[in-house]
Length: 374
Image 1 (tube, rainbow, N blue to C red):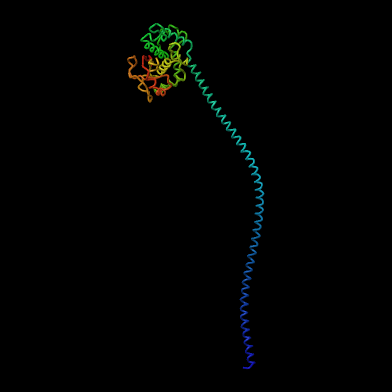
Image 2: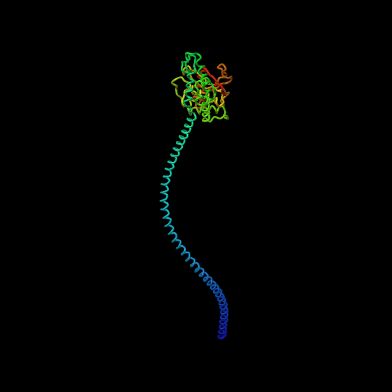
């Protein structure tokens, strides 16, 4: 082959290669242009998003600025409130101290009030007691006329030795106890309204001086005593006895007699004192007035001497214990059970505790029913 043909062939090859290379490059350029267009679209979209975000950032910045303003305002308010809280704490601390002082003063005042209340209650109780005592004194007042009548009766009721009853030596007369206890029962009967010594009433002109008979005066006083004792017909027999004992001990205290006089019930109430005989005559009279058949009993003890107690004609004392006699018709008492009541005791409950260390040790010497009674 000639050199010219070889050169032509080579040139043609170069041209063909150039053409092919240009086509490939053109294809690549087009591809790159497409990618650039895509990227430009993405960039434009991104720029739009950035623009939107910038707007949002600006809006948030405005909000943040507004919130910062609010925070600043709240900080200012908080600072003011902290100052106010501090002031309130100081005020509260002062008030707590004052409240503590006031509470201490209140406690002191409460103690004073309680003390004064107790004193007032005591004074009221004393006042009521004084009123009751005054009322009792007025109700139980017997007066000179009745008292001299009682003395007149004692001076004109004689025993075996023609001495006023109660003043002669009982040991000189075997039947002295019977006469004496009968007189005691008559005293109880008289003061609840039974005419017992009509000759003596008329002989001393009691009615002419007072406008009423002695037994009427006595009955009025005894009715007052029954009212003071709060004894009602609806009460059980046991309650009547309890109220009688309680009342007697609220009015009468024990004292020895210097003379062997026996007091009428109204005298014992007026004197506010008496011995065992006085207590027994008064209790028998009140129990009769309450509707309980009663008797005065004289008892003896080998070491303690003589003593007076009351007998009641009942079957039992409910839940209380008692010492009794099944039959005292030999002493001219109504047939049936007679229970011993010791008027020296303030209640049947107290008597319960002494049935076997006191009541049981006495032996009955003489007894007499209150006549014209229940």
